[in-house]
Length: 425
Image (cartoon, rainbow, N blue to C red; front, side, top):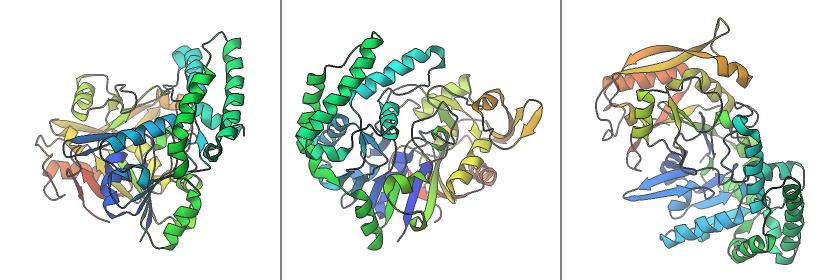
């Protein structure tokens, strides 16, 4: 059995939810290890569509234990709403889920602060989802946050909540902004405690015991490599580490116990929000990719920026994550295009470079260098093997892998669970 980390190799929205759901057919435990309800993982099973934000994507399969690890920031009200919605649809979410007592909690005042800070940035806004993710991680780092374990004692929890809410309201009043109705918000939090307290666990211990027992463990990342707080296009990033190393710190399993890393790649590129995006297409082709790919945020509904595949960014992401295998998604979105372009290098200040710049200001100025390949102009949504792909599609996939320095494991040619096939291990 193996412990596998699955991460996004682009700017998020690569299709991780679907791939996680596909891979969990052979998994025993799924661990979400970072991020918060700013993530949106979409899984389509038959005629049903599920959009998951905090709950791991393995929740839709019976017999799988799902873990929200200590690296996740958790809005307790949003978490219960998500669990309750799943249970109303017949998914036994509570019985399949455990929540780390070490995870940090998000409250309404974090969301207000998120919006306040974003508003002050004006034209320099980061494109945050305003879900309170950044302020909650900031409280964690400043050692003033509230951990999920506090929910087990309602009296202690209320005292902590009211004290921190008062501090935030003082900031809001001084700035002349909206303040939080503390009593109303506490009532919402208090109402969900009986539902969430039974889920609390020492999930690091739970995960390690599962590994000791030879269980198949799948670590689920949110967002993507280029939104990583350290390695991403800073400051246009999320507030957590989205790369594979975070699976250890946010999931509780030692690095020596991770067996492999699988990266998820879209057959083209997308990005939500602000920040550099060298291959962005602001033309009819970009519109076509957005329309055919349904490129609208699962969490916010915002239209995604679309562009050609960026092999420079992908190769660097493969290196950072140690991704020996990839799952390639949305290949079918390219079915109608007569010509495809792949970014193989950048022109920056008169020089050709083949590695990602460290500074986002340099990436903003980078001009992509493209090579062209013929499209296949055939429907691939019914394909269920690599051999059955059109010859031009196989050539395109092979070139992406060659440029990225990794191997193929899974291909997705549509949103449904059954529009997925494995090509290797």
